[in-house]
Structures are given as C-alpha cells and as structure tokens.
Image (tube, rainbow over all chains, first blue to last red; front, side, top):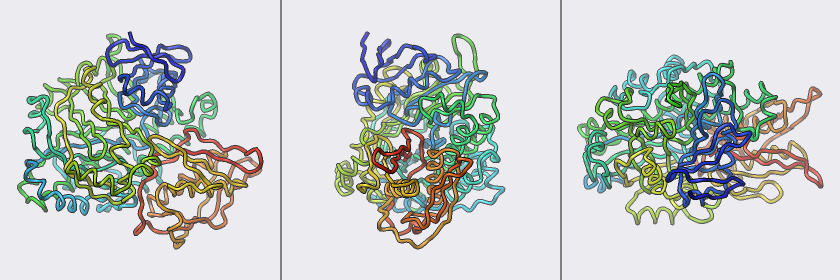
Length: 485
Length: 146
C-alpha cells in the first residue's frame, strides 16, 4: 500500500486511485480521495486536504468526506467535494454547494460534421456572440413578469418550454428533468431575485463559456449512439454556466443569516465558510427552498441558452439543421439534493452535497430517458477553454464508492494573477489558433485569465475516474470555437 | 489586477482572488478593500465618476460589515452594471450598541465601454480577517469567489 504525507496527514492508497485519511477525532468519518500521485502532488499544499478533513468533522456525515480527482482549494468545502448527511442528525451547508448554485453543463448534439462547420466557424461564433449575452454586466434578452419569475423558480426549465424556448425533449434529457422540487421563491431574498432578474439566458464571465466542439474519439460506440452521437467528426455544443447573480446572492444571504442566528455554532468552526444549519431546522428548510429556486433558475438559464444556440445555427446553417439539434444531457455540478442511497446494505435518504462534482448514476436509474437507461447517466466533464472535454457514463461503482458522483472538470492550477503575468491575450489567442480553435471573447483580459496553461490536465482527472470505475469514457470532444465573457 | 502599494496588494490564490488592504481607520480600510475588489474586475482608475449610489450597511461584527459592504457593491454591479471609481463621504462607525455601520456614496460608471475582464461572484469568509497593525491603522484580508 502506497502512503504519502500532506498537510500533516497520512494518505493511504487502499485501492488503486482511491486514497484514504483515517478518521481521528474530531473527524467522524475518513476522508476518501479519488486521485493519483501526480494529481495529489499538485494539491498537496493548497489547503484542500485540510478542507476535506474539516468536512469529515461535520455532524451527521455518512461514510466518508469524499473528494474527486479535480480537487483544489475552495471555501469551507474543497472543490471536488462530495458529502452525504443523514436526514435526521445531519446538516446542510451553503459552502458545500458553492456560490454558483447549480453551475453546470449542457451538451447539445448537432447533425453537422466538422468539415461543414470549420469553414463557417467565425460566422457561427459571431452569431452565438450576438445571440447569447456573455460577459460582466451583459443583460438578458428576456423581460420577466413577476408571475413568470415565480413560475420559473418553482418549475425550472419546464417554464421555458411553455414559453416557447426549447422542447419537451430537451427537458427529458436534463438532470432532475430541469427542476428540483421543493423550491420556494419567497425564501430567496428580494436582493437575490433582483440580481437574477435581468440575467436569465446569459452566460456570465470567468470560466463560463459556450464551446463548439467535435467528437474526436469514441471509446464506447453503443453508449455514444444511445447518447445521440453519431460518430467521429460530429459537431457538438457545450454550455457551461449557472444561476448567475441569483445563486451567488442566495448563498451569500444564507451564510450571513446562519452566522447571525447561530453565533454559538460559528465559534466552534474551523472555517467560517463551513457554516451550516441542522437539517429540520427552520433556517435549513429556508435555505434548501431558496437553493432549489436558484437551481431551477440555472436549469432554465442553460435551457434558454440552448434555444439561442439553435437560433444561431439556424442563422448560419438554416432551419432544418437547427431543428435537428438535440440535447444530450444537462448536469448540475454545484448542488445539494435529497437522494436515496444504499448505506451499509440499507436504503437511506441523505442530503447529498456536490461541490464541483457531477452526479454519475448507474444503468437502470429511472429518471433517465428510456434509451439512456441501459447505459447509465451521461456525465459531462468540460476541460479548460480550448482543450478537450469528455462525455462519460455513470456506473454501479460510483453508487457503491461515492454516492453516484464523479469529477466535474480540469481544476485550476495557476491563479488568475499569475496567468495575467505569464500570458497575454495575443499569445493565448495565437496558441488557440495553432490548435485551430477560434475565440470570441467579451474581454481581452478574460482570455489570459482562462488560458489553458492555467489549468490542470483534464486527461489525468478522466483517467482517475475511468480507472477507478466511477465513470467510464464514452467520447472525447475537441473545440473548434469558443465564446466567452 | 495591479497592486497599489500601501493601499492593497493581491496575493496568490489558485482558483480565485485574494488580497490584503490597509487603512488608517475603518473607513479607509473599507475603501481600499472595495477598490481592490473592483480592481479584479476592471482598471478602476479608468472608470469615470459619473453615477452615484448611496448605501447604508449594518452588521454585528466588523468582518461581517466588510462582507456586507463588499457584497452590496457586487449587488450594484449585477443590478445596475455599476463599476466603482471612488467614494464620497464613506464612513464606517461603531455604534454604542456595538453594531458596525458603513454609509456613504459609491461613485462610478455604467460598465459599457470598459474592458471588464472578470466577474467577482461573491465575497467569502475564507481566510478573512481585520486586525490592528502594529504601528497604526488596520489590515484586512479577503478572498473573493470568481
């Protein structure tokens, strides 16, 4: 058994690519990390291991404080964190979900090939840039009435379908069918609602993007076909964004409320961002209801952007092409949900936190569309801007090992501050062009901050997921063009 | 993201942004923390002081007051497209019931036409502190989520 010392803890590789830190008081459960030595080396001193240990001390945590391969330091919980809490004596923590509630990824399949799209990529990016508001301060094209706003917070993307955005088929191909039940708009503050009001159907900035990609490699043809992918060279579109200012404000509001209303609890915390509320308490119920409203906003946001993507393709390639664009899947990677899991042979409902982690449910999961059921849930893992992304599928091993979860992306390696010093907008653009990737960005500086060199190698993360069996590779996607804030 | 010696300095943070800010009193400390926050978003010195927004923020602790003050400015960014340039009459006071108050007017401009590189999503409590400096004045450390 390999061992390693990091941040004062002993890490033991008990199974290939699964490393443990034994539970020692005040830890209630062990830390379980899906990683390898190479990835561990990069995060061994960033504070994320200590954060995983902190999570292991929280009340009602079930089995383990789990960290996925894209682990890096976050607030309270580390990025890549997965933690299940007992519904009776557990907790819900805004820091275990993140500020961008239901940040996630939607993947669309087009009927076009790389040969058809490459010659028109600049024109396509121009249309996407014009139709999908990106960047800081970009305003929504939709004006919401009070009634609409309430409705979408409660019903999620189904609201958008009723309004003529996207299709019922899109909805069926979406985690939780684009709506988490239990949302109560009244539990999201007026400030939160105001922040989201003019942002529905916008991408935002930072690492959020719309990317035109093509299938470069197929690892499992049967699953790829079931997932609406026809083979090498097919053009896909990936949308990465979340609940915008709405979710950020919900998280901020409840961190402050939990702090103000539970001073005794704050005093005992290793990190104030670990602030939580005991499940069943009024404040926990209120937070969950507000978080669901923000999650539904995010599902709707990506759904509306999917509609704008279709519109953009229509403007360049015509109506028939646009009509054939389908949704492969839409996943949330910053979320808490009530889920049933088998714990020590018994069915148990838990409050499952995924903070920078993707749900990866196995074959037979009944929420999935019928044609996906034999293969499990699609898992969408974006790489950094301009590199590769992957589609994987969920497995029974994910259910058994880590509450049906896997990694969510590449994980940052270099700070934006350093990236700004290290790269220039022109050098990054030139590098992208060398790889035949076009870019259209709202900000020149934003290009350097998201330089591919500032991220870890997503391939390593994928290998850990694949080799440990918690998700299996289906296809690899390579970008042709990027639209970003 | 350019540090301003004596006012604020950016520190290395893998995924997000971290800075230290200084001030002879809380008012100056809060001002510099706000300028550091908007310095991540755009070049603050290029922003023209065309728009004004009055604010009043109150909290039980000084850290919470700074948190809420910065959060309010981010709220203005999202709802009004507001970029900060400076403050008028920024005052941070401690009341007799020991609550903290931050009041004043934020001056700046609508975002259109400026190179806005990055969005600050939220203020965090991660590694946050406000402490008295040995010589005189105050130092704050803040990590914001990008």
